[in-house]
Image 1: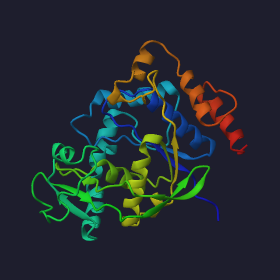
Image 2: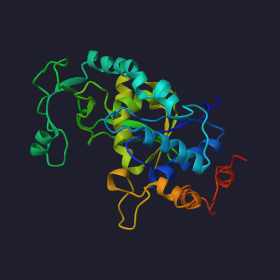
Image 3: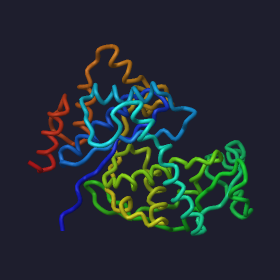
Image 4: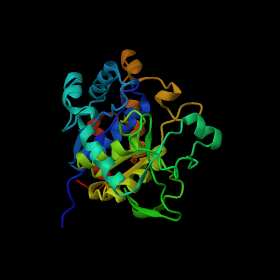
Length: 299
């Protein structure tokens, strides 16, 4: 039986200007999809209304244009995104997943603040304060948390190149799936979106390995087959001169600044070539796909 066509996504968050690490991940995701004749979705994760700005959404489109990357599904501009593709247009869909988890007895209500959690647990892991309190799910300013996996629980993940692997959920604690403001949290929304758009190939940085395992835990509880059968590749992170990963929260230089300075994206294509294990270094989208096709023996 033939495997289904590859479906992947670019999933930036419009909470700041995109940085080189975002561009590198875009390039590698896109190149693998094109080498495999797969589909690319542009999914912009804008649940955080307080931090979302139109200028940041616009930056996503300008960055893709500068990189020379196209996509097959998704919004064609800022207004089209907010009207038809925003995560806020799928709130009822997320709510369905949340109610399933609640009905299965997999959730508990929690009123803890970050400050309270930090005071009891310096590493930020949830200390279990509200687990047995049986608080009202529908009370104001109440978050919903998933019950932590049982001790010794494993989940199977399909890794690109390595194949299936049983991995531990030991360090996955009772994370939030519904925020105090009533909106779904990242782990729930990201899983739900990947299921909604039938994504079966996910490219992520190594720093999101915990998120993948947390979402696979949710997928197993919900019985979402597409995500459980998806293939994952967690690539190394692009780091600055100080050895720290490049990110918006760390104040990494923006790709907008590169564009305004007349810089070429070729350096990112060369770095992507190395991360993909290519012997040569591509400097453009077409070159990278051609080299990758040969590397994956798809020619």
